[in-house]
Structures are given as C-alpha cells and as structure tokens.
Length: 425
Image (tube, rainbow, N blue to C red):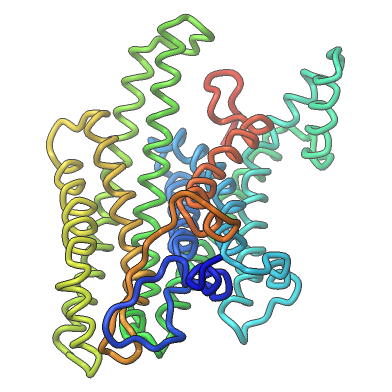
C-alpha cells in the first residue's frame, strides 16, 4: 500500500478529493454522492405524496389513476429515503439511534420524529384506500387451494385488521379518513423535505448554504422532482400495458384506449408540474440575485464558484438543460408522450444537479476563502467505501425504490390494471 493509499484509507474523503491552492490540511469533501442523493430521495417522497393529494384532498378526479399509483410509490420511496444516510455512515449500525432517541435539539435527531409521523400517515392512507380490496381478496381466496393462495389469504386477513364491513357507511368513513390523512400529510411531507433544506441552511460556517430560503427552495424543487418521477414511471407502466394489449396478453382495454388515457393524464399532470417549476425556478433565481445584491464578505469566493468554476453545472446543466429546456418542451402545443418523457428526464436531471451543486458546490471552496476542492466520484469500487460512495452505490439507491414498489404492488396492486387493481378510492 502506497503512502497516498494509506492516507485515503484513514481519512474519509481523501479518496475522491483533489485540492487546489490554499486549503487547510484537514479539509476534504466529506459529504459525497450519498448526501446528494439523500435530499433528492426525500424530495421524491414529498412530491409523490403531494401529487396523490391533488386527487384525495382537492378532488381532481382526472388524476385518480395517477394519485393511487403516486401514493404507493411515495411509500416505496419513503422506505428507501434513509438508505443514502446509512450508506454514507462509517458505522451504519448506529443509524437506528436516530429513531430510538428522537428529540428536537438536533436537526438530524428530529428526523426520527418526522419520518415516523409521515410513515404512519402514508401507511394508514394506503390501508384505507386498499381496505375494500383486502376484503374482496379474502372472500376470493377463502376456499382457494394451493400454498400460495393460503399465504396470500393469511396476509390479506392480517392486513385487513378485522375490518370486513363493506356497507356504504364504512365506505364513506374510509373516504373521510383518506381525505383527513391526505390533508395532514401535505404539510408533514413538506416538513420532511423542508428539514433537509433546513439542515443545509442552518450551517453558519458555509456561505453557500447559509440562507433562510434554502428550506423553501428544497420543498419546491422536491415537489417538481416527485411529480416528474411519478409521471415518468406512469408513462413506462402505460407503455408496458399497451405492449401487452397488442400481444393480447390480459388486454384490460384496447391499446388505442390505453394510449388515449395515458396522454390525457400526462397533459393534465404536466400543467401542475409546470406551475411548481415556475415557483421553484423563481425562488432559486431570487436567492441568487439576493446574494449578489447584498454581496457580503464571502461573495467573492461564492462568485468564483458560481460564475466560474461551477458555471457549466449551474447555468448549463441545471438551469439551461434541466429547467428551461423541459419548461419549453412541456409548454409547447400538442404535447406527445415522447416529448414528455424527454422533458421529464431533463427535469429530474435538473433537480439532481441542483442537489449536486448545493452539496458538492458548498464544499468546493476552502474555509481559507483562497483554495478550492474538486470531487471525483469513484466509479469502479476497490473497497467497501468506494462502493458506498461511488457510482455503484448511487445505482443501488436509485434502483431500490422500484424494487420496493414492485414488491408492494404484489400485495396492493395498482400497476396491473383492470380487475386486479385496488378498488374504491
């Protein structure tokens, strides 16, 4: 082992940090790709839940299919949201202490309270939405033969919690509970992600992060990314349904009808997405203008980072390709599915770049205000740390919510279509 490799093995961050000019010897880019992913993932959770609430709370019936899917996807994303933190921790077994010792004297410790509250709301709402489906499945599987059917029967009996009432009164009670939970869940979902922005915005030692607008900026961009991901996943599912319908495998409806429903839902949801994009972009530009106008002592180093060293990341990739281009594509008349897919991918890239520029950009200048650090994400892992903090760790976290969604959908199907879907709300 060379001297540099031994140093990289001892100091967290030394393996991917390159220093330039006057940098303190103990300074590194400690928060790497997993900390970029953490606010990105929690943002997806909040955005997916807000999208589902547009139907449950505000009665946007045209979003009914998208709302049911978004609610389940929000739950899958919620389970995956703490994973980047566990990947980043040098002692991940201590991560559970956040949940066992919650308090408000630490922003991270408060995460346990917010996370459990939000998890309970989402799980309860899914239960009320799916309760009638559980009862129908219990009746259907009651006398079914086979081990798999008996296991599913026991699972649905357990998940029904003994609530077998299918009368109109029970249905109204379910609907009322869903509406109340959705209404409570919106501010909690926003708080879940706003606190991620609060953590960055409250770091007084970092000139780029220290702004009271940071939580609001995070919330708006979170809703944008969550809606974009739900739309993109919805399009993929509908395209899969069309493909199966064309091959006459369980054709719930003709492929032509599926395409009609798909594009109408996408067009309607795109209007909400554009609205939230306007709010998110306006807040980010307002923060940028405010920093330049006030021009405090740290503005010189921030200007060098924003307008010189990270110019491509911020103004080309984030604002240009990630915000302005998809904004025009979504507003352009006669929106098509293909154009929507490209625009949604660009929106997600733009939000991810915003998180990247905040987390990595905020650590790219030294506290001496005279030196810079560059982050090079490890690609091929040669030990556990370079896997967790590298490209394959990133890939693992990004794939995880879709695996969870597939597993949850096995018990609470919203992706199958037709008769297999959850009924009711």
